[in-house]
Amino acid sequence: MAHDATAHHDDHDHKPHGFVNRWLYATNHKDIGTMYLVFSLVMFFLGGLMAMVIRAELMYPGLQLVEPEFFNQMTTMHALVMIFGAVMPAFVGLANWMVPLMIGAPDMALPRMNNWSFWIMPFAFTVLLLPLGLKVFFGIGGGGPAGGWTLYPPLSLQGGDNVAFTIFAVHMMGISSIMGAINIIATILNMRAPGMDLLKMPVFVWSWLITAFLLIAVMPVLAGAVTMLLTDKFFGTTFFSATGGGDPVMFQHIFWFFGHPEVYIMILPAFGVVSEIIPTFARKPLFGYKAMVYAIASIAFLSFIVWAHHMFTVGMPLGGELFFMYATMLIAVPTGIKVFNWVFTMWKGSMTFETPMLFALGFVILFTIGGFSGLMLAIVPADFQYHDTYFVVAHFHYVLVTGAVFSIMAATYYWLPKWTGRMYNESLGKWHFWLSTIFVNLLFFPQHFLGLAGMPRRIPDYNVAFADWNWISSIGGFGFGLSQLLFAYIIWDCARNKSLAKATDQVWEGARGLEWTVSSPAPYHSFVTPPVIDDSKLAHGDVTH
Image 1: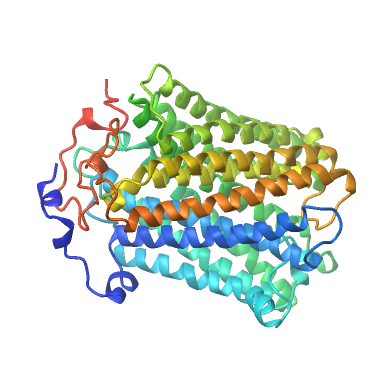
Image 2 (image 1 turned 60 degrees about the vertical axis):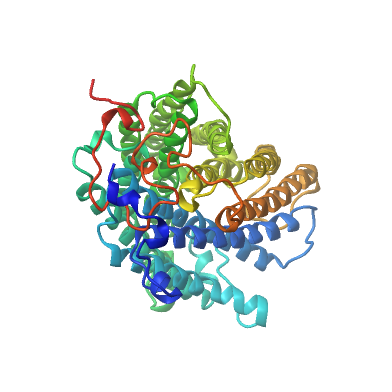
């Protein structure tokens, strides 16, 4: 263990003085990680507020509370804020905080660029939210984008100025993502402590290395698609308009070539997190470490050849439909391997059920449900029935909320003691888990039934036949939303309450890996001298024999 890193108490840890110096000019990976995490929490609540508007409108049939146009703005903005503002920055924040600690690096490879990639985000979201804010608070303009988060033309081009704002914001978010990804790749490939071979890295680090390559591959594709939208709207081109020889379906192809790898960008780090947590609380090394790494790489590769399963109903030739159907089913295999290995890691382990483990278990079970509904959607003739119904909404919320968001919550509880130096309130953590789990299933499980019965997505009004399940779904929505206030309180309490129990360096009895060798709270500058790698202390045990 690096004695320099742990000997100094955090009071004498050379932090920059003053708010501006410490935060605005931050180059320390821990500070930037913290800013990303706080930003994503704020966005999570903002996106949640929009979801509350959606669920309040849909609680009863008939137009109830908001104009249909505003409802469409809510569905569009909710998705953009949650995807680009809550889930992705949260994972980047976790990467910033934990990757250097996990590989024994003193910091990220490109600290100034790291600062830059964070500070682009608040500006991007200010630009995105501006048209909506002006409409809501001042009654100016037409409000936010209302074409769905997929921004499909011609609908997305029917907005006013908000089109330009949205596209500019998406460009900025893309730049931020690419910069963050370059930084993570450079750090992992160049800054590992001596003896930390690639196949000794924790799975979380592997998952982020592969995710970063995905980001660099697909963000420019999205940038191209939205730039063509921009020129169609303001410069008279007809890329996506049949009147000038273009084709709106081309937009879907370009968008989903970004869009499907994007959903794996949001879930691969989650797989990494769960692969750290389950071995800790099962007190066993991860089962099938190499298989887990190869599975993440396989999922990343396959994510590029499944995009058109979002487009089965556009009139593709039969050969195309078959290809994308089989490719989509194939991606279930490496995902299934991962679930199998998590279960096997727990098998005969001496398990305890602290809050991180509860969220990780919730993730495994509920994400698997989302995976199975994805396989149902992969079947072309069946998809003709499910497409554009609430069944799709149920599917992707099971993988994104009980998948990505649950894993972020698990990671927060798991590493919070390391960040703050204090143990969070365990009983409140358990309350947060059980309330979230009960309400999230109440929220999204009925939507499968609504979808199978034929209720379309993105509508403010519906047939009275769908009323009962919508009412239950809305109750679940409000319950889940309110439960997250508890989450925010637990984090705040853990950061500020001096009377909480002090965390040990190792924090969790079964924890392995370099991040548990530095003091709690983690020192401002860790691993000033590279740590000595002991294979027996690695999270997944010694895989060389």
